Length: 512
Image 1 (cartoon, helix red, strand yellow):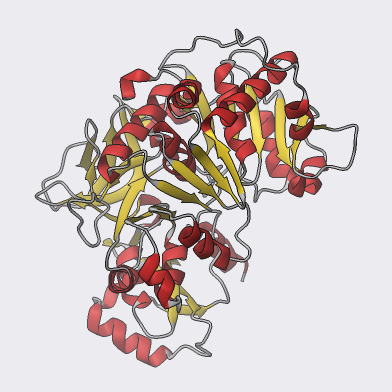
Image 2: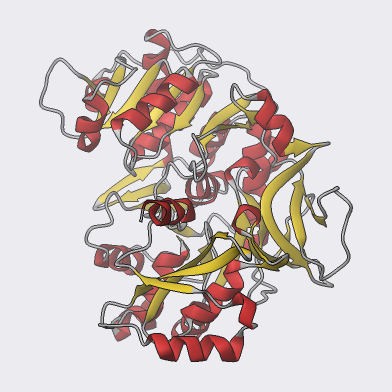
C-alpha cells in the first residue's frame, strides 16, 4: 500500500471511495464516516485556497484533539501546503516563536485556547474550532455550512513523495525548539512499516487521547488507522480520565496508544472486573519514554489477552525507529529496527561497535527527516552521511534488539567512569513508595560530576524511607553509582508526552 499514495490527501480520497459508509471517527456520541471526512476536507481546502494559502505555505494548528485537526491536515495536503502542529501546552510567547520561525500564514485554533492565541500572536489570520460567540470570527462551523465551497474539486496540487508535508517542532528539552521537516515519504513509510509490525488492519479501532500535535500520536495514532481504513475513537479532553476507559470499552477499542505515565497509572488502577473481562484490546503500544520494569510486569498480569509493546522513536524519524512486535517482545528492549531501516551502535568517531557494547545510537532509513527548518548547521550536525544521530545511547543484542541505556547528554562521568542515570533510576523506581525518579549529574570539584536523585512519591506514601532506600541501592548498585544527594519533590517536571525535563532539575539546583 505504501506505493499507492504520494500525499496524505490521497489516503483520505482513496478510503472515502472504498469505504464511503464506514465510520472512521467516533467522537462522543457522534459518528463520522469516511465520505463525510472527504467532503469536509474538500470544503476546507477550497476555503484555504480562497484565503490565499498556496503550495509550500505553512498552516499552523493550535488545536485540541478533534476531527477538525484531521480535516485541516488533509486539506492542507490537498492544496500542497505544509501543516505545523503546535504543542497546545505552550504559552503565547512560545507559540509566537513557532509561528514566526515557521512563517505560518494561517493559524487554526481551538476556542479553549483563545486566551493564549489572543495574547500578541504573530498570526492574525485565524480559523476557530469550538463554540465561538463572536460573529466576526471565522469558524469551522460557518465554512462547513457554506454549500458553495468544495463544488469545484480541481484545486488539488500534485506534490511528490520528497516534498515536505509536516513540520514537527521538537519539544525543546535543550534550547529553542527546532522544526523537523517531514516529507510525504517519511510519514507514509512510517505508517506502512508500523502497520506491518503491529499487524494493523481495517478492523482495528484505535483510541486517541494523547495530544494529536505529538508526532507519535499523529503518525501512528491518527494517520495510520486512516491509512489502513480503520477507525479511531477521539478523546477531546483527558478529564475525567475514567472516560478513556469507558470509551475503550463501549467503542470496542483494539489498539491502545499510551505513554509510560498512563501505563504506570493503569498498572496500579483498580479497574472493574467487567472492563478486564469485556475489553477488546489486543495491544497496548508505548512510546515517548522508557517503561519501568514493574509496570511491564503489572500490565502483563492484569491484561492477559493483550500485549504491551514498547517502541522507540523521535520527531526527526517520523517518529518510529523500533518496536517490539506481536510475534516477539523482549522486556527492557524497544524492539528491532523496522523493515528497510538500519540501527547501528557507534563510538565517538562513528566506528561501529560490537554486539552488546554501549555507544551512540544512529539510524538510517526512509523515515529520516529532510532536515531542520532554517537551520542548515543543526541539520549537518544531526544527519551525517544519511545517518541520524539520535543523541541516545544503547546497545544491540545478538538478535539486533535495541536496548536504550540513556540520553547522551544525561550521561554522568564521575572520576572518569560512566554512570548511566537510567540504570540507577530503575533501581530506585522499584523501591516501595517511589512513583518515579530522575538522576542527574552535578559538578563536583573532586569527582568531576556526582549523581543526584530526585524522587516523586506515590500518593499514599507520606515519607521516603531514605535509610532503607540507601541500603536497597547498596545491594543493587556499585558504590560510585549511588546518588550522593536525594531530594524528594512533589512532582517531577515533564513535557507534554511525559518525558522528565532534567534540565529543569539542573537549573533548580543551580538556583538553590
